[in-house]
Image (cartoon, rainbow, N blue to C red; front, side):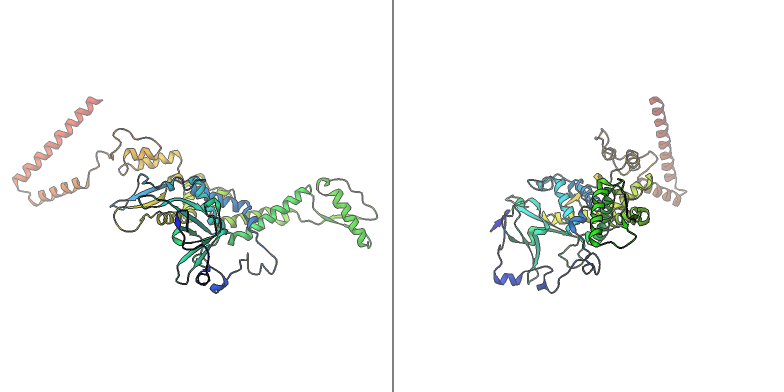
Length: 459
């Protein structure tokens, strides 16, 4: 059977294959796990709801920031030359890097890739193969719903993936595909090499706490920012009377009716019992929970609106730190997996090699003053056209060369001069050498005078 152009070894599991293939983490493999927000949470009825955590403002901001920052970078096809320098080359038919599939743009595709990895700890990408004569074969890539995919390990150690029906991705029936047809990007493999773990595992409790604080505050302000309290009577009252008074009070003096005048008789008194926000330190607790979430994702807190931004002159270093501690491992993982999926040799072998690379200039874009400062300091290393390209300008005539000041000399010229001085010092009485040195000095003097006359004429 073929699905998306690839031949599937089997779509149902006969009896012998059911024994040979076991889901990763099943009881049959000798272990299973229960995920808790903290030790003993299950006994205390403390539950971290996955969908609720996704709605936490700090968690949402971290995930979408990381996904959008990676997705906005253009993926380049690069080639390594004999000097082991990677240079962008024309796309040799790898259109899948530009348009991954029929319903997603490049940005949407990589956003789905990264969000699946951050939310579920795993990203499963199904390859679609075509009949290209060059043998690359991969014509489309589809990010699968991670809840519909299960890694399987055969008795010989080979890896397969159980994929449920996913019509959007072209999977019309429940199938089992070999690992060669799935790109599996996994994150934080604490329990098994094939099972990634989402950062929500560590930040879920802080997100739940933040949501509880916000929910409690919302109810408080729905009540007109009036604290709750108790009605007390000087003597004992029946339960039926207490329930009637409570219902009457809730109906007439809470919610939209908060702030109305209540008339109490028979010695009844109202006493507020709710602690004030300053007593509970709600703002500090909410900020702390958001900072914990940012720490779990390795995102600087100021980048998602939590905490104070650094000084202006430190923003560049903060962005570099954000890239190195948060984005780099995610970016390089995608690059390596794309190289393998598209049959590129990447780092393997010697000589010319092809690979994929995200354009980091789209991420670490500098301000205008810094751009020109860096371009100016690149003189002697970069050509004028390369410097102009970094600042967003087109090439210019005569710009395809490296410029240096006149007093700069090549290493070869300096070596030749030193060699000449050594020879002159070793033969101080040699008339021929002395005459040659004098002649060279005279020629240099005449050249200098000629250049001076030309310069005066230009002025």
